[in-house]
Amino acid sequence: MDNASTLNKGQQVRRAANPLQAEGKPPMSNEHPYPEKTVGAPFVDDPKMRMRDVDVFYGDKQAIHGVSLDIGKNEVVALIGPSGCGKSTFLRSLNRMNDTIDICRVSGSLHLEEQDLYDPKMDVVELRARVGMVFQKPNPFPKSIYDNVAYGPRLHGLANKKYDLDEIVETSLRKAGLWEEVKDRLHQPGTGLSGGQQQRLCIARTIAVSPEVVLMDEPCSALDPIATAKIEELIAELSESYTIAIVTHSMQQAARVSQRTAYFHLGHLVEMNDTDTVFTKPQHSLTEAYITGRFG
Ligand SMILES: Nc1ncnc2c1ncn2[C@@H]1O[C@H](COP(=O)(O)OP(=O)(O)OP(=O)(O)O)[C@@H](O)[C@H]1O
Image 1 (cartoon, rainbow, N blue to C red):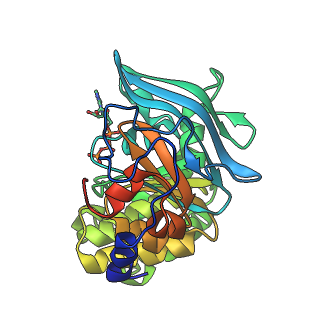
Image 2 (cartoon, rainbow, N blue to C red):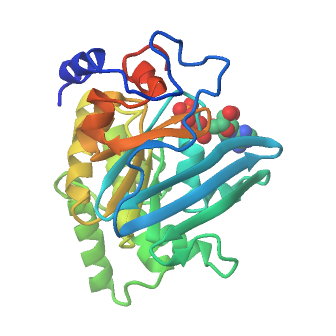
């Protein structure tokens, strides 16, 4: 779906018959602006990740309010919404990155298949290998390209012999679409690569430990359009092997890469549905207002 068609369709959306909305009423009225339950279809059969009634607080301030959604196996789910609506906070709760923030507290039920993510016995290092993360700004370690990718497999004891490690490094770089560009300079610093290459290196580093889920927090926001297009192509390829959740500010990107989209507003999950439906027939006035550019 190209940019123009996404937005043109967005302009023509029908208004959903939701009793909490009134035709012509601004989305943020004095009435509670959210549906009692998320509208659309936030749940799937046999999910890879299952979140129910998730609240996240920073100190006394609640950033996520009772969010329930599933992420399906090998699905790409996009999390969208205005700045500060809690997309990154929610994403970070999926591999306990929020644990690194002292004042942050997560409650509710969050599962990776049968595994309770917040089980006190959970090994968080192991969890973050199973649920890897790619950040907004490419953040290669100050090490060689090879050692960036080999870091995780070494840490987790995934390769005993140099030959096995070489193979993991090559396979990961190939999957990240970077092998051809770096195969002759594997021992040069990762930080010497271009921004787009560094981000693909970070993706290679993430997939080198064979994660089940890859979380991406605005992975293209620091990249130019060509590097962005490469990462988007990569997301489609990676989704054959991994489950992906991506936070993005770009509705066009969400439309291009994801099968389902979740729309967040002030910490609430307002709507979740298949991506085409969210962008062409949103069921909530807040979603419609966002996708038609009335706020953001
Ligand atoms: N470390 C923190 N300490 C306190 N409050 C925080 C912290 N991180 C985020 N918040 C607050 O939580 C709310 C949600 O922020 P979050 O970064 O998750 O939103 P977002 O939708 O990802 O925003 P953006 O699109 O601008 O990145 C905001 O009100 C933000 O100020």
